[in-house]
Structures are given as structure tokens and as C-alpha cells.
Length: 225
Image 1 (tube, rainbow, N blue to C red):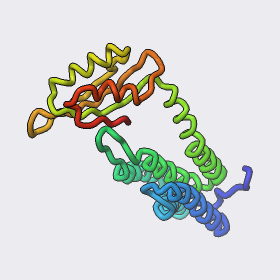
Image 2: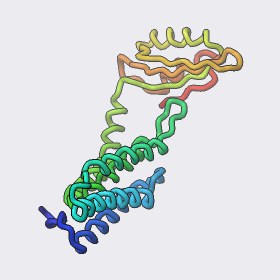
Image 3: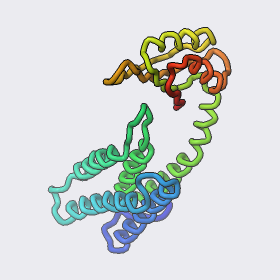
């Protein structure tokens, strides 16, 4: 063990586990809070500490009530329960999904708390560091990949659905194919909202795609995702 063996049931080890859980949960929450995300320092710390308490309780039962403890049962309930908590942070609007990273971070914080609670402090520290590194580095990698992607997601609102076919034909004439399409119609009138995933055979700017789509005066709005 890098930091020592914290698996034994002693007052010192219990305090180290609880403090380590509070610090790791707080660090993760602080990072999310600085970005003004849904779950901040308080939420992450409470989730991490709660998961730690679950594992401490499991070990306590195992020591003082032999034969009654099942080290997997409570831990699995924590993972499932935090999954439901994470669902509450996910928002889907206009084909945009927000809160997935926050939900995943909540779940990961709980698993870190479980690891620290059973004495595997090294694992909790290592995963916290790797997770923070991923949250800060991967967005740059994703933006670079997105800039060089030949796919484009766009939402088009039209006054009349019959003009969608004309727009698709104009896109095909510009070597832009429709990879997939979802259409939702309005309950009032003939207006329609189309969600298109476009694939370009050549490098093309979004402004050029916008100009092709807005040739028709029946287009109410164009939104790139």
C-alpha cells in the first residue's frame, strides 16, 4: 500500500477514511461548482461521505455480528440509488442532453466513497486524480475532433412540412447527405420541426449550410447542435 494499510478497524483508520472521503468528495464537487454545474461541493461531499458510511457500517456488522454481513449487498444498493439521483440532473430539451457528466460524476463520487470506506484509500485518490484530469483534458480533445468531423447536427423549424423535401434536395446538391432525420409536427397548423444529422463529403463551414437551408422563406429558425 502506498499510503499504508487502512483496512483494520481502528479509530485512527476510521478517522482517516472519513476525512479522506470528505476531501476527495469536496475536491470533485469544487471542480464541478467552479464550472457552475448542477451538483457542487456540498452534493458531491455528502454523496461520498454517505457511501463511505455504508462501507463502514458493513465492516462494523461483519466484526460485531459475524455471519450477518454481506459486503456486496449495501454497496450495490448505493450504486443503484445514486444512479436514480443522477437521473434527476439530466435534462433533455430540443434534442440537447444536459447533465450527463454531472450524473456520471455523482455516481463516480459514490464509488470513490465506497472504496475509501472499506480502506482502499489509494484507489479513491487515484481515481479522483484521473477523473479530474479527464474532465479537464477530454473537452479539448472532443472540441478538436468535433472541428474535424464531417457530421453536423441541425434543427430546422418550418412553417409547412412540404418544404422540408426542397431543403433536403438543396443539401444533396451541395454534397451534403442526410444521415438520419427525426420529425415532430405541431398540434396547431402545418408547422414542423426536423432534427437532421448531416454528413458532408468535403470540408464545409456551418455558415454555408445555414445559407443553403435558409434559401426558403418558410424556414422559421435554424439551430446547430
